[in-house]
Amino acid sequence: MDIQSLTLVMGRTVIVDNRAGANGIMVAAKTPREVIARLNEGLVKSLNERDLREKLLARGAEPLTNTPAQFTAFLAEDMKRWAKVAKGPGIKVE
Picture 1 (tube, rainbow, N blue to C red):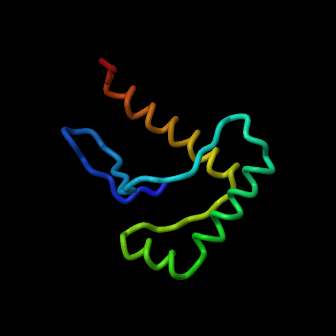
Picture 2: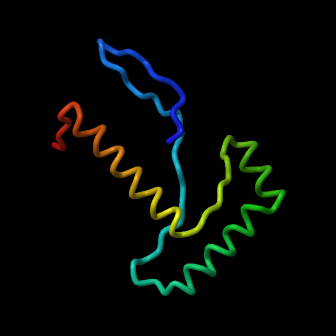
């Protein structure tokens, strides 16, 4: 987790995470691993092309590439983290 700062709010310490968000490509659960690997290979290649990378950086996006397993782990960890945030103050879905 990339924590930028801690802030005191109403006597409680709040972690402020300045990530703007994350983007990724998802496919159906039963997509063959070979297809996923080929898609990932093409996406990584595209995101590493200088022209596209420069355009993304100019728009404030930091293109990061990883493996499908790393992205899956990131999503699982992110969901756990935000579930704790939502449960902490007793937020309920209406």
